[in-house]
Length: 267
Length: 259
Ligand SMILES: Nc1ncnc2c1ncn2[C@@H]1O[C@H](COP(=O)(O)OP(=O)(O)OP(=O)(O)O)[C@@H](O)[C@H]1O
Ligand SMILES: [Mg+2]
Image (cartoon, rainbow over all chains, first blue to last red; front, side):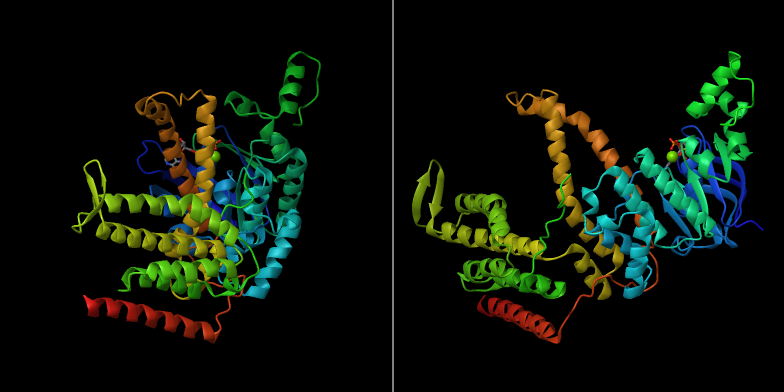
């Protein structure tokens, strides 16, 4: 039995005419690191919201099919229970700052305060999480004074500190430089190896090829293709459907077309 | 981006150390007494002998003074003029300005009301300057205030300075697009109009995302909350709060008795 199990999930936002997700079937094993790719409007963020319980609990709208995480069913659970198992961080870090806290340390502790973690345990968990994402030196800064990339690290840390079983990340490194991105992907990879299940949306496919176990390509709300990163990311099907390819893939493909490169394209 | 996006100033002072509820009770008591006490000079005395010394005791006098002169004084001054001119009380005209008469009574009335408003805003300023917003939130929710309610108050306090910064950015953008400050008000309003849509829509999306973000961090959890900082509430502070409450009741009673 898969740790994350979506069966025939169709979801439509309120006041819209077409579903944002259509008949999605998706299984993720415990400790697996799965990446989601797809063009704009494919439904990647919606899939994240569905996994994290916000669709339909927060957005309302129409949902059919079943969403199961860790043996529990989303429709039979409430959002405040669901978020204890599933952590969500998304792209815009600025909007993820609670606005109720003064320093980064307090900001990260916010979630633990909410779920009633005792003070001493709270402090050590915040310390550990900050060490994990490399933001110890930001502890006393105001979250608003940080750069976008630093804020993204704070947003990620604020979720990691909650120790979710399933970590859902919607473009969590969009404002980081390549060095920062590599570090953060390394951290996420490590979390997966320690048993955390990870679902991550990412546009920069080079990173996926290097770090993810499996890729799911989404298009118009449905799963178009899934499999090993280098297979999915180099597939002709993706190019035909207007997916963004890595610059390596497009160069290699061009080279093949002109007869410069004869072998298989790996990424 | 500004380092400090809340009014609170971190300093080591007796006022900073007070429990947030005690501070809140203190300023509310000062305000209520200023508004209800039957003695004419109460708000003036409260300002001179309580609010201003307290800002010194809280080691925030320079900041307090800045806010008082730049923000509170103009507001209270405006109120004073309006009421002095347009309050039709008293007989004896001591000053004439075109068709407007100023009487001794209207002047006194306006002076007291302006003073009351001055006390009200300055006491709140003092509170905001010396109170850590998240401590206030933790303390109030611990005492049973619904979390959502506390959150709205606190995040508004934090976000106000942020909006101020945003407004300044927009004005700067306006200027660089060649906003004509010489032209008529209508023309200027017209050039601001196209910005309103994105601003409002932008903030709606922001609000939604922020709601998702805090909810993802267990904000609506039914577990009883804990807090990172210990917020002391020694028993003498409880005594102070009761004493303040008694003073307010006395002031209201005196007001009712004499009227
Ligand atoms: N809150 C919402 N209300 C109504 N419709 C929405 C909402 N959010 C997304 N949609 C619609 O659902 C569809 C899928 O959007 P989604 O945001 O999931 O795409 P995405 O793959 O994340 O795109 P992007 O790469 O731009 O982030 C789109 O047609 C979008 O217009
Ligand atoms: Mg998206």
